[in-house]
Image 1 (cartoon, rainbow, N blue to C red):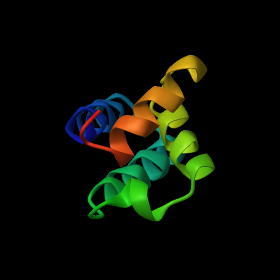
Image 2 (cartoon, one colour):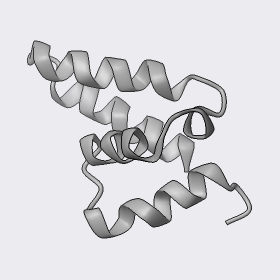
Image 3 (cartoon, helix red, strand yellow):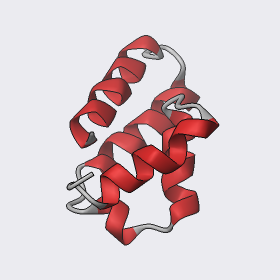
Image 4 (cartoon, rainbow, N blue to C red):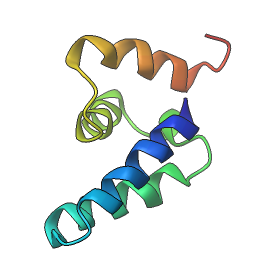
Amino acid sequence: MLEKLKQINNTKLELYNKDKEKQKIYQLIANLLEVDNLFLKIDMETAYAILRDLDFEEKELNQIYCQLIDPKL
């Protein structure tokens, strides 16, 4: 799932390459996604905010978050 998030974020970086504000957001997310065990180190609301920025629907957030914190799921 983490690789999927990185791919989505990279796509957004390319898509918004001329929008400096969006570039800052997606570059920050790219940097965060490189942190080992990121989703175990941040609170749930921050994780949900990242997922929202990557355009996941509200109803998907809990399931995706659970997959990110427990790779067995």
